[in-house]
Length: 341
Ligand code: KG4
Ligand code: ZN
Image 1 (cartoon, rainbow, N blue to C red):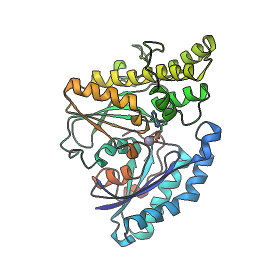
Image 2: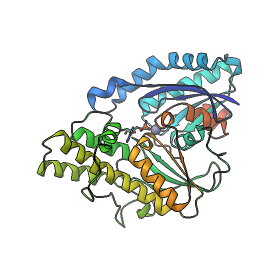
Image 3: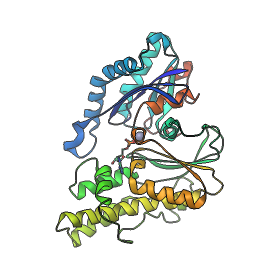
């Protein structure tokens, strides 16, 4: 099955063609630079960019795959979660294309697609054989932990109760006047100096906090971390670049430790740990997850760096695995900005 996938949930405009869920024939990803001066994604600008860029990006994906429209078996797009005005562009385009070409339409969940991104690596095992699996999706919009015992059934067992991990890094970078997006900048600074111990709190969620029925020990909180950074720089202002790098490294360590500790707790009985999303690019997180999986004799499945951020190959791939909502029902669906897998 050859699927054309479309992804426009945030500020990446992307189209890809994937065969049988895992073989990428093309994957065109455009990251909008228009948001940089604002230090965050501006929804109105994002949707306008998607409208202007998406047709050309779909055309490019078709050309790179060297396929004609009659060789495409289905059109898949992200239906949610994400920014409403951004989702609308990709989802409406997919609907229009599917109707016009008389092909099936497939609604894909963006978070489940991040989990599938690890299987775009040709060296990864068959997704049906990597079970039971713990899956971590960490990005600018979400930080969630799922237990997968049966293929396609994602059981949410932990999540952030406030900011996402990427959001916490982006906000810290803004506070430290490092630029946007902050994750990669903090990652780079973190590599220049080892973290000090326990400078920032680890984002524990107190018993009794509203977690939607989830075990509080598997949930994380990053909003307090940002506040403690603000206190820290107010009382101990950095005086040189080395000070800033040290603070970035300490802060990153707190974010990474919060994630790794939750994974450690949730790994019981799991054969694999799959990790996707923009924050999974983080070198310190990768290093600590490798250590954890070595210790626990669990196979770590990391998405290839080019598939960590938002991309349409993970959308087309997941659709090619038979996941998502299709049939006439799909055409009746609207976007779902808070859709959980
Ligand atoms: O998956 P993604 O492209 O978009 C969302 O679905 O949110 O993730 C973007 C997030 C941003 O917060 C960005 O700062 C973070 O991923 N990020 C990183 C790194 N590269 C991107 N965070 C930590 N270390 C990195 N190397
Ligand atoms: Zn994402």
